[in-house]
Length: 197
Image (cartoon, helix red, strand yellow):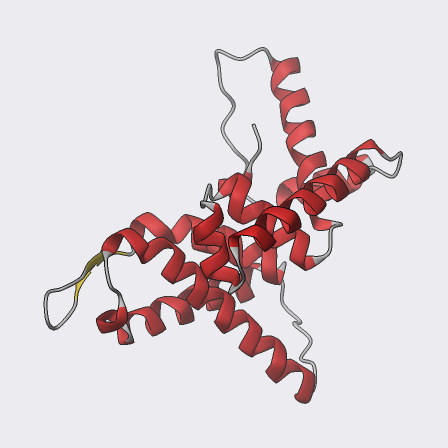
């Protein structure tokens, strides 16, 4: 969906950003329905604020900033509102098609490694998770991440170094996931943009 602002200063193709936004929302919320709601709300707010977008080049970090702010606002609201429990859950996880050219064992090992990294990232504090996702999976620059997080680029670099160190510790520790956790992570991983293979 391409959106053009009223004054034609900005044209924005939301479709090219949806996967990244959804993946980032999954990292923040850890819930498919909530991630979808976050992306939808962020896109609606972006549509309303198209006139504030300076250039299309900054659209990516602008959208991620909006998404993060929507998430932070929802967290603040949850602290004051009673918690809702979801009775229905979607257990229908689609499986990825197998690559016929790849050795089945190599494919299995790659998937297991990807799931182990995904689980290790989930064990990190939210600040570490989000900075790793923004840099390593979304490939945002330090300056773009600084814009999204609202901090200096130097702070981004030091936070990223600490987050990578924590991730290495989790991966190196013997507390890796059981086969059941890996299976659940593979089924619940709706954010395929964050596959590490």
